[in-house]
Image (tube, rainbow, N blue to C red; front, side, top):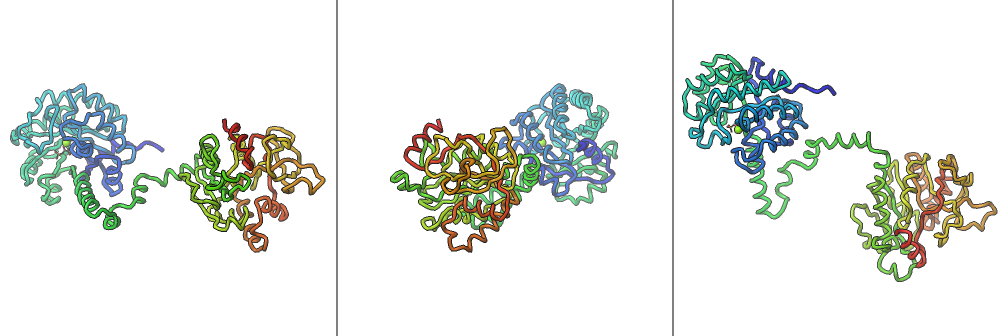
Amino acid sequence: MPKINKAKKLRKLLHSNKLEFILEAHNGLSAKIVENTGFKGIWASGLAMSAQFGVRDSNEASWTQVVDMLEFMSDVTEIPILLDGDTGYGNFNNMRRLVMKLEQRDIAGVCIEDKQFPKTNSFIDGEKQPLAEIEEFCGKIKAGKDSQTNDDFCIVARVEALIAGWGMKEALRRAEAYREAGADGILIHSKQSRPDEILEFAKEWAQRSPLVIVPTKYYSTPTEAFRKAGIDLVIWANHMIRASVAAMEKRSKQIFQSESLVDIEDKVATVNHLFSLQSAEELSQAQDKYLSQQSNMNAIVLAASRGNELHELTYDKPKAMLSIGGHSLLRRLIDELKRLGINKSTVIAGYKADAINIPGIKKRINRRYEKTDELASLACAEKDFSDDMLIIYGDLLFRGYILRDLLETEGDIVVVVDSALDNPNLSGKPDVAYCSKADDRSPFMQNVLLESLSISSASTKKKPSGYWIGMMRVRKRGKKWIDKALKELNKRDDFDSLTLPDLLNYLIEKGKPINIHYIDGHWLDVNSLDDIDRAGDFTK
Ligand code: SPV
Ligand code: MG
């Protein structure tokens, strides 16, 4: 995107031949709000910025802290920002460096006032504050102008003579000197509640250069009077910070007194509104564009069974919550999924569901776990199915590369099959896989399809190709097949006894291709006490 020249925009505001308005902002959020409202520019007020830091408007916040804040403001807006640069934070040399740093952050201009560093706010004993020497201040303006690299960067000179009680003549003398030194505009400041001296100044000034005012004290003046006086720019200088202070004090008192949120929920901005001010939507679109596919995946984890073979070890928890080396099997699995960018997991619990207390997962409960098998559990998570998901047993231990490689394997449904038929870690009754081709151990064997799964190899003379390990990846079309199959199988009397292998066999019967991702060992599922020892070694 071509960079918009914010300095040019500010210059245009100063020279627009009509009265323009800019509003104060003091951080990224308020800057965004000012822009969203429709203002054409932002006043980065020294008073408001120091107030939001909780310090005084007396150069207590360092100039680099101010510049850091400006960066946030500038990053989230496209309208120009005019910085209230106090006295330029030092002499001509500090001014040069300030201009350089402001330009680097795309700040459109800076206003400096003819006082001495450290200054204090003009409305606090304004008449006691010493003014800068005219020559010295002119040198500062010149140094700033000479160091800017963008011709449109604006330096506005603020005349404090009226505030300090030095009179109209001195104010005009100073303004003229600053104009001649190269200032792009004059800000004439007043603390009177009536606009008389400002209007008089404007008349005498006679549009020699752009004129800027801050009607904080003479706020009741009709805006038309400024227009008629030929003023170019009005700064509403501190009303965002004051609005927020009033709102925060009111609401914090209410919460404190009521010890409840009931009365204020409707009176504060919604969390969604905050998200929108933070452009959360843009981030989610960028995630879709830039994050690898697997980060949008979710995992459906089956963890409803007790694991009866483990006897008293699973007396008070399901098998997936057995601790191996200090972490439960399920915890290890969820951590591994996260490591590979799968951050959404639905765990289907059943037996001792309360014992599954892993943060950040969604839990679905198969209340009929005692009378049902895997498919009934899977159906409990139907609402969480997505167009890219992993279905996996909750008690599975495996080396990370297995899942990583699975995520890179093509296919609407891909199941992981261990072709090491003599894998010493195997126990229980693993599901025997018969596939269209045996594993030839080439790195990326493709287009191998599952022909059937069976609980034992005795039923057929065909040579098994390996064991299904209880992990499958399902893409959009595969999900549709599974949705449909679950509906159809649910009508069968034996639905409660059906397992994931039954589902896969059913899909194969219906002609759906189930792809194979072959591995060679490096996984374990815990079925017996011996497996627990093996699992301990496996996780070391
Ligand atoms: C500011 O906004 O910090 C200003 C304007 O300097 S005023 O507070 O009115 O002096
Ligand atoms: Mg200020």
